[in-house]
Amino acid sequence: MELRQLKYFVRAAELLNFTQAAEDLFITQSTLSHQIKELENSLDTLLFDRIAKRVRLTEAGEVMLQYARKTIQQAEESRQVLLDLNNMKSGKIIIGSTYGLQELLMESIVEYNEKYPDIEIQIIYGSTTDLLQKILDYEIDCMLSFMSESGHNELMINKLFSAHLSLIVHQSHSWAKLKKVALEKVVELPLALPSQSYSIRNLLDKLLDDKGIQLHTKMEINDIHSLLQLVNTNKWSTILMNTSLFDFKELKAIPLEGKNTVREATIAISKGIYHKKSLVLFQEILLKKSEVYKNE
View 1: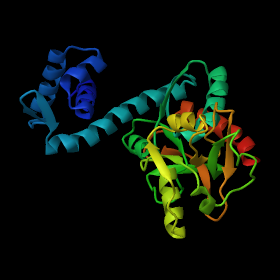
View 2: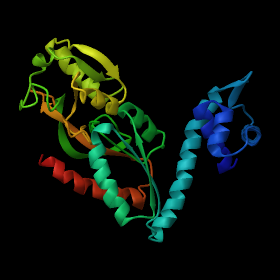
View 3: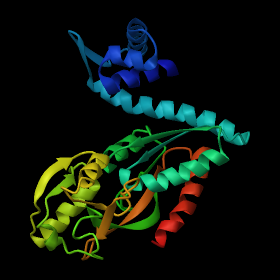
View 4: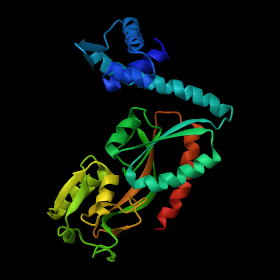
């Protein structure tokens, strides 16, 4: 069993498409198929069911995928440990983030790159649900989100700052000068809301259920940037955290009144991985930058 074979297997298992996996890995399909077959022979078990031109994981393949990911992660960690021992500020960091924390993230990585230009940075945006799965699968090193500190024993979670659930309107909207707004009042407005894959939508739905309120939802979108573009036309409003307005200077966030409308922005790191120096350095800068948001 070779590390290269495990990497090939993981990519093929993620895509369930040998042609696409081979393209992503910059190898030929025949090479990929041969290496996976060699892996299966060494394990004396089939990892994929091959049905016509389609493939799917066998039960053994599902189990192997978990261990393969961990083995690849451990191999990367061992390399990183040696780099850190030599005090080499290089390597790679993969950061997952929800859109609502984009502004803090951008400020942090600008300073991070200036201080440590030899560290490669990869950023992945997604919903809290998507990012949680990625960090548990060792696909990202950390995640910035509004996920609570409780109920996640596999993760080390640190608070960054508090944010407010807010009605987002265009600055020319008749409500734009309001300091606060009641959720009951928002029923008057046509809304475009984030889809239920976003934790913020789950929070909003719970508040609505508790109050017995039904909003005038005209549209649901699983992309926050698109939501903000719609609000920027002044034809719709939305409900997001007040930190979600990055690069939309024409929009205004009006905090919602009531209890349970404040959430903690957090950074989560898996407890099961080696906390490489590049990750520790990033977290230090992020925590420093977040101090500004605590006073807003």
